[in-house]
Amino acid sequence: MTIGQQSPAHATPDDLFARLQALGIETKTVRHAPVFTVEESKALRGQLPGGHCKSLFLKDKKGKFWLVVTLEDSRIDLKRLAQQLGAGRLSFGKPEAMRDLLGVEPGSVTPFSVINPSAVSVQIILEERMLSQRPLHYHPLLNDQTTAIEPEDLVRFIRACGHAPQIHALAVS
Image (cartoon, rainbow, N blue to C red; front, side, top):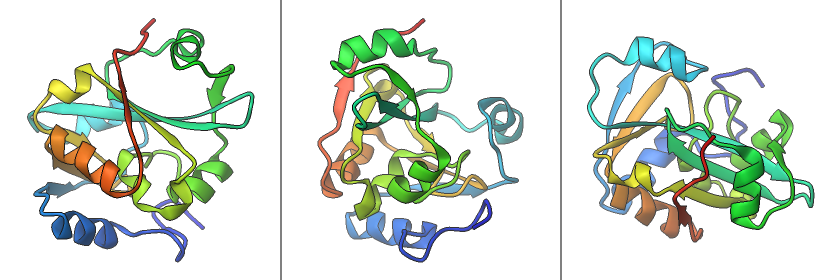
């Protein structure tokens, strides 16, 4: 599977948009060239207002997976974050695990990936500071688009997908 493609077992952006619409959640999506880093996103996005975000796919030494969603300028100290969450030592999850659990490729990690039933074991952590921004911007499962959503709608979507997100004032470096 190449970047920009998804397994048939995982949701597509069209599946995501249909689910959001079924929940009565309004979003706005713009298409752009694929971006893989925050720096590329900043250069490409122009003047989209609101909070621009990043998502970190992490694993602790006990094998538990975490999806930590923050504002793009947040610098997360993984050692302090592990202590804050009561987790074992945190490291970045492998791309294979990301594909299997979240159904996305590196560069496309997003809280929208909880639409996939395979993500059920992933603990979702949302940065408290991020939720004060309006709107929030995330990739809709592929990194050639950016979708704007209101913070309360993001939380409602995550809960509708069967997750209980934790909201934290995250430990930053």
